[in-house]
Image (tube, rainbow, N blue to C red; front, side, top):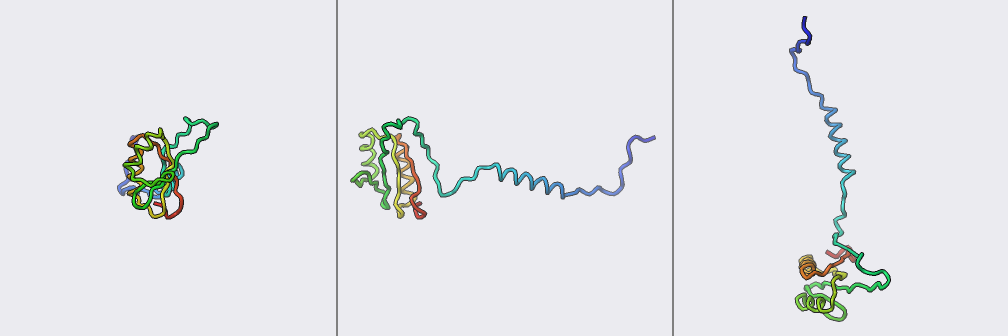
Length: 131
């Protein structure tokens, strides 16, 4: 008396349909749970908890021009000359803007130099042509 049935001589086919269903369900699950960021935004730290809402002093606005110089108030200076003035004025956070013809390299250079000088930068795209 045999407790186990003998194996059939022909191979048992693997059914692939349930496997495809599981892969599809996993694909849909991960697509729905992943966070998709728009490619036209640059995420920068924007910590406004340290500022008082009552004083509400506007942040200085810096604009990066096409040749890499920075406009601040009525001045247009190279970044190397502007940083000491910002530090001397006690500025630790700025709004950084660009013109439509500003190169991505000039923007990135300005952003990294500001971060290296412990000046936080907030940036928002002005138009679709801005890098």
